[in-house]
Length: 307
Ligand code: SF4
Ligand code: ZN
Image: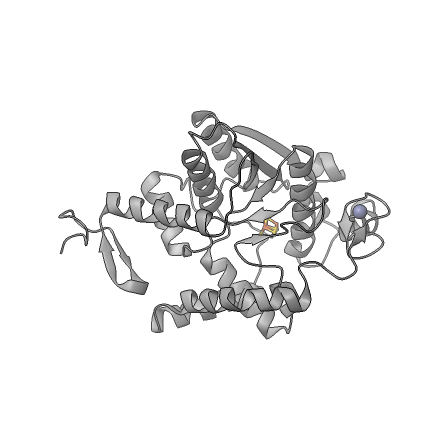
């Protein structure tokens, strides 16, 4: 058995089209797919300052490496890594150590902001009194800081490491929960041209599956250790993830079909629902964008963090 494109030993089988590739042909395949996504959806424009949301995990490290590589001859493009330290002992401290070394080796500027400094308490501390689902509060605070800090850094785009699996799960979740309004705000790029306080998001790994990103990260040595957040709990997303994976293994190509159908429908969804919450305003406390008078983060600060 040899690689489809040369005579080397294959290392990966791309299930969807049943193609076997060797290491170097796989790297070429992966990188050209990311470049194609960037070109097709116009993710990078002249004079962009792209801030990459990094966690030290495989997806965002792959994304950071590739954006740096793809733009290395573009003097007008700036790439900055932005990490949020939630304050999760034995997890985030380790992944941030990996990220710091990675950025140093690859000469990438890295900015880290923590919950402790920005909100007064680390997540581990917050969870001593907060009895809700950890990801609910953590996700809101994380998205808040990513938008606020990338804006302060002068970003024109915020790049995230979302892959095809993440998107397929979100599409199915929104469908199952009758939340199509939320789907209207998804896609390979979001927030373009909508509000000066929102930094547009781009997802250059959008058309690559989790397995493909993991294989690339593994080949490139970006997988430090398989490190999982201890607060991750059984959630609706986990259940949807297992279901979509089960379908994929029985009917290869399911994830591509979900995302491709969604992309076809997206223009209609956007024109029907709009790309922003109808009630978008600025939070009266922190002046960040919010769908209510006081944003969710400020509400958490009052009700949970200051308690
Ligand atoms: Fe926060 Fe949940 Fe992610 Fe852990 S898994 S970092 S708690 S959002
Ligand atoms: Zn606020």
